[in-house]
Amino acid sequence: KRAKIKEMMKHAWNNYKGYAWGLNELKPISKGGHSSSLFGNIKGATIVDALDTLFIMEMKNEFEEAKSWVEENLDFNVNAEISVFEVNIRFVGGLLSAYYLSGEEIFRKKAVELGVKLLPAFHTPSGIPWALLNMKSGIGRNWPWASGGSSILAEFGTLHLEFMHLSHLSGNPIFAEKVMNIRTVLNKLEKPQGLYPNYLNPSSGQWGQHHVSVGGLGDSFYEYLLKAWLMSDKTDLEAKKMYFDAVQAIETHLIRKSSSGLTYIAEWKGGLLEHKMGHLTCFAGGMFALGADGAPEAMAQHYLELGAEIARTCHESYNRTFMKLGPEAFRFDGGVEAIATRQNEKYYILRPEVMETYMYMWRLTHDPKYRKWAWEAVEALENHCRVNGGYSGLRDVYLLHESYDDVQQSFFLAETLKYLYLIFSDDDLLPLEHWIFNSEAHLLPILRKEKKEVEIREE
Ligand code: DMJ
Image 1: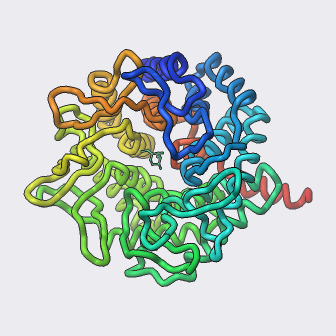
Image 2: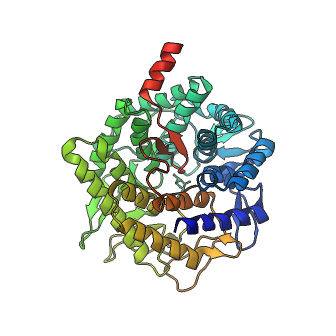
């Protein structure tokens, strides 16, 4: 099964190489390059996102050709606007991970160079960064659709892990200072019912609309609180407290059970619940399980079970479709459970979150059902997403025939295939005691307490 996942990676990679080499993503049906505005003019998203997966799968020649491309072509001096969040999780995260796995200096150098280019995004009155940044002029702004000019919680809250490593590797504290200031701002603010709204205005330093989500716009903020604590070798107690306080408020206000007993995480809009769960929200099963160990003893089992329940609900969202792949969002109202009811929520874009949760649940419980569910997804991907030219997303997972979206997302190689590979590997490949996965499944080592003490003494 593990060999099969590697073969899938080869198929995705070879087609990208054949039809879209050096461009951001592959169009597997029309067999050409796909460019997303998220990366501005920066090129090679699939190459940088895939580096660590290639390394882990021991695809040595492919890793070397990717490395050469980075050396010769990866260029951040572009006159274009990028998404700070996307560039951070995919490019900074991908380069850091490649560096830590391979020890090749070029990746460290490029990661720090890119980190420096992102710093002007923090030039706001509060220090909460802009969502978008012009890489040449250093001028930032926010998404025009975001509540009253707000920055997005999941975007500015998903820089912490990478920026801590940038300071560690460059010896320059500026990166750590920038993300620690985000904490300071958040900790000064009153939280409605203990919840973190998705919107925060960087000029006033005040919340925008009181919408709360563990899916899109909120998700990886919570993930990074937990992982900040774990990555600090459990010394960052502020992050630990923020995480467990937030999870407690989420359980009280957002987590519900359907009439047939499926646990789900709803969205909260100014106190009213929308009984909808996004595919993105499915990562939370793995997060709850990963955090269980740090919870007060009486709660550890509870968090592991909560993780298992979310995994089961997300598996149901897959199982209740024709393609056996989950929709972008599914609902628990109007007589349905774990089913998408709106046409614009029925698509599947090769997302990883459900495989991510299966990976953590497998590692933490060794219940064989997680391998079984992961294999069901592999078969579904092969039957419905695999095409001659790579892997494509689907427009509607409830249809009898595939309607392709013609995009092979870079996170399919960075995350979906990596998590699947790990599910069918032994636990000593990337043990959770040593590695933290960033939000794009890139690997960052835990910064050891003893090591830090030695470094301080040496200074
Ligand atoms: C990825 O870029 C990351 O996992 C991000 O946190 C959420 N969206 C995609 C995958 O769905």
